[in-house]
Image (cartoon, rainbow, N blue to C red; front, side):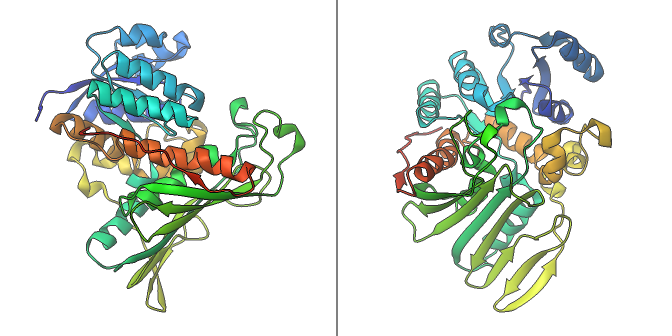
Length: 372
């Protein structure tokens, strides 16, 4: 057990700036450095938060022997390369979702974690959201009974987002709906079958050669009688933003609200009742508990798009930081560790392959990780 603060470097300061004050207040971390390619912006944020170490070159940051861990919040296509570079430089890694964009890169990261003994955690917001923590608490108390089925969806409209998102296959960014259905029973996906449906605007298709408006995937769990279904849409589909999951148990079931900010529903047998989801700041150290309800982007004109659409990510940010830092201090695996992160990420990657093949079954690779 280590009680010394870990020197943290945050890479990518759009969405990433949300985490700076959390690391600054947590007793197990020293918010040591930030990295952003735009020098003016990086220095502005460094000044605003009182951070002296400001990098514009990621490779230079990794040469700094004082950096213990990096928290990566850069565009999706950079995640795998930057995670691998950090691990090879001897740094622990927390990385925003998804882990990578190919099965091969997921394998490489798991292998590098195995080789180095370093810690990797994919920072999946939904599995630390207050809604998930509420259902997890019900499940662990035995209130749900036996889980019979899980369902999740992540629907949004990404028109107007940065160019690399245009035409993205829906399941390539599926961790927000895959994460909760695997995390609740702490399961691994064994194989998937996915169907694509509908068609997006023709000008969006060429970048990724993906025509589908919606992709919906069935997941078979490994060594379990359970299965789940996840649905994802990104363009040309009328729906209020929604990150949701439903859990059907033998005693009680939980269904996410259909309209944001309305109450979710618990079914006891055939009797439904609306339920208010409490905040779970009480699970956190006092110094960071307030971050479940307020973030850096506190003005309507100063909020990151993912934070607005994701309804503040369910208060998950301080829970994610706390799990990562405690895992480092206790020298244990965080959830999700590299193997679990790879399994969650590859469900989406292989689901899209299945959709392009007309729904054929795709088996998840075996990711082996001994003790990390």
